[in-house]
Length: 99
Image (cartoon, one colour):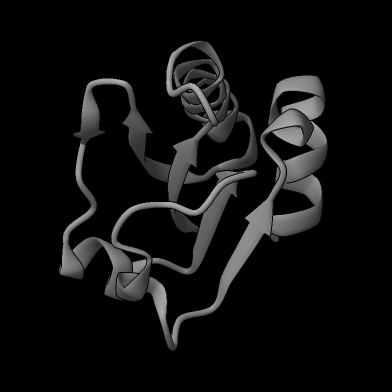
């Protein structure tokens, strides 16, 4: 399975990057290829391309705030997940959303 994700938090510092790291570390356990775009204090990093988005089996928006360039995901099968869910139990997120 191929997943792309966007992580963002209100301050754009710790939780944005902690969630991205948790997703990337957990993905191999679930046989998932993942690319994570972060939208933090440094701006957008690891930008998802139109090809990344179109070829993904699932799109995870891990954020409690509006993300930048959200229009890219209109018409796609994406799931909005509170950032706290990833930080508290990333394995559960994969079990629920990435099958």
